[in-house]
Length: 438
Image (cartoon, rainbow, N blue to C red; front, side):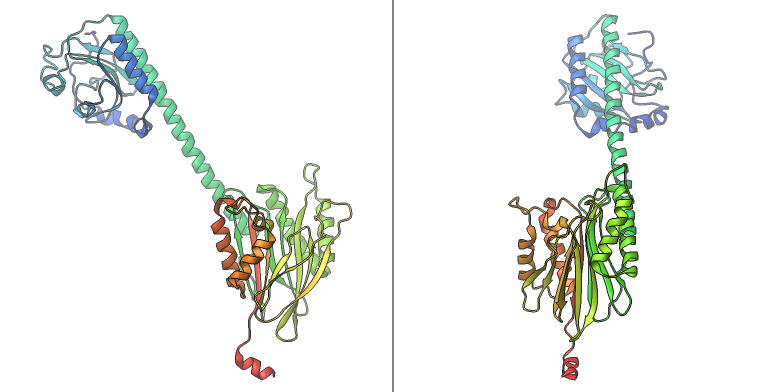
């Protein structure tokens, strides 16, 4: 036994509370098996030519076996207080050459019990700050008198065990920090996204409206947007679009685009003129010398005879709106030919007009919807979307939105991009109103 061996081999003594704190910092040691620590135990047994070895962590009243060699059937024995844990104030490697004859260990359960330990050597696992976590220990059922060089080797193995614990703890902390970062990013993204969209849609007399935003990535701000706002003479402006990029740059571009569309509509509400004004503004806003572009639909709603609405739309590279007619058919309101906004020298914008009668609805959406992948791997596309809407018979804005949201949910991981939705519908007036109008 070395001169600095502890006076007794008992469970953690009066200084146990002081030592329990650093032990608790290493839950990773128990979270999952560690092949590296098992190899350390196997190497310790090989160096001593002993049948058993283990790596333990200590707490105030017991030792926990976290890696072992030759101890698969006796792991529970290491939960007994005493032998596997170093006592005493100083963390020194030591040996008990014959535990049965040593008065300090002769009555220990691991010595008197079925395991019959006669030889025990241990080296402390010590942090850089000098705090003891546990041991790398070797056990045999016969007395042993190994040389000092083997005890030195055991001390080196304990240092390797400490390095492994530090690596595993560092990995856990890195994962935790990344999770916290992602959580913060998600909260920031959600907050920023909310500032880019109207908190509520205004109430339009004789019209129902509903909107939704489906995010593909919770920690990344998308560039999809929509709005519905009043114009002069009982008319209403509406738009939906998608700017290039993601993150903070897309958020800045989205804010600029929404503000410009609203301001341009006040100056001249003609839909093509509004998109032309937006095109000029985006071309004046360069980011690192690159273009800033978007797709958009801009429209003007105007009350029409028969409780209907006239909808005039202009498109710039955006998917066409879909009208669900009173008979259940779905009709694309084509703006095909309209080109990207802010990218081309002289872009072309396409204008079209449709009528929404009572019992009819209109869906405006961004391309994340039609570019989503179905379970068979194909894109959903406009045709399949129209078939889905026709089968659902979505005649109201709320029902239309519910139908599309359910479709997006059913596609799951097939939805790879954000999707903005804006739905409008003209309700069927009560029967009494119909009779009064005759």
